[in-house]
Image (cartoon, rainbow, N blue to C red; front, side):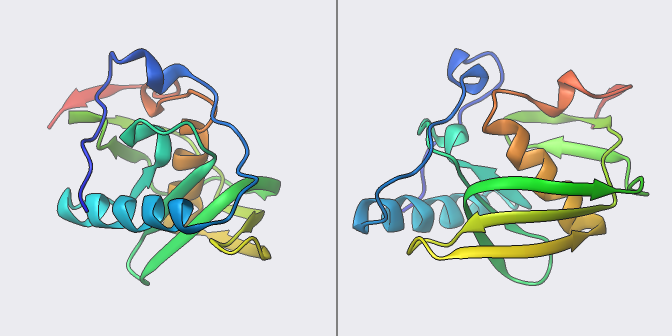
Length: 150
């Protein structure tokens, strides 16, 4: 089921999301709804806070299928990402130039609570960092060196 995307200016986007401790049908429904919402909006990622839920959850699809991240953390990062342009479903009609790491080593849980470790590069690393920032109330426009209308 598609959910409404919260837009820039709504104070919920600036709140810190809470750790997920219960891995149940409600969480699975939230994740499924987030995937539907992201796809319908033609986005590359969506965090739970962007649909009004303060849980440490986000989904991405950077061309290799959907990945679901619960309680994500960056363990280590390296390099400078060549992709500078960034946009956001919560900040429509704008894009900005944001410097992000090219490689991130991460841990997260899947929808069932299983711990996963991974190494993400390029676009996948950029998307992870962007969505992970949302969980701490940070928007890409806070880090952008330049913002332009699209």
